[in-house]
Image 1: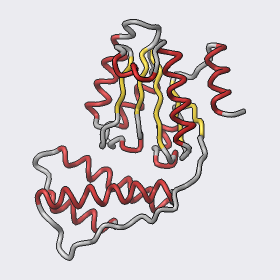
Image 2: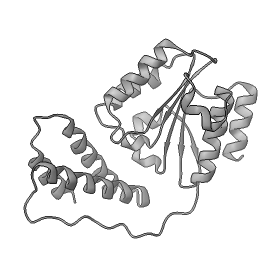
Image 3: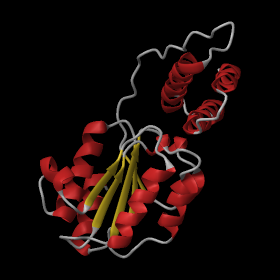
Length: 218
């Protein structure tokens, strides 16, 4: 059964899971399924999702613990117009390690009036403990053949803003590589760089040491 057919059947019978993970590289099919679910739950067309008081989307990079706390607060209030609050976590692989426990708790103790949908190209980039709390649908498409360029590695670790820029370039490279080739090594590299990027939220962190760590991972 195609993912779209399964979703329609679940909505018709009222057996839609409280949390869904959509993965895969078929962005057209994935976006179509997402818009269909949200349209049915919110009773509005896709162009008006962002205006609906029961809709909340997270697409920051990284996704921080404050993002998840805001989601949990909205879930605790409940829907204002419809029957459910609808939450969309776009590119869940951007979830910071600090935010993971908060999201896990929300998934383990879902409210009766909440629906959470998370999306990613590569399900292997999602922590197994989180992935196991979602119903999972795969949308398979063509994998890009575009070569992924590794950032130039400096002879000396940069400092200040240059260190931040290098770290983000390394993170983007690792993310792209883990999506294209989700080996244990690539996923581990991406996870390490994501933790390093999350540490930038601390104003007292030594940026040069984070850059050195990124160089070591690359």
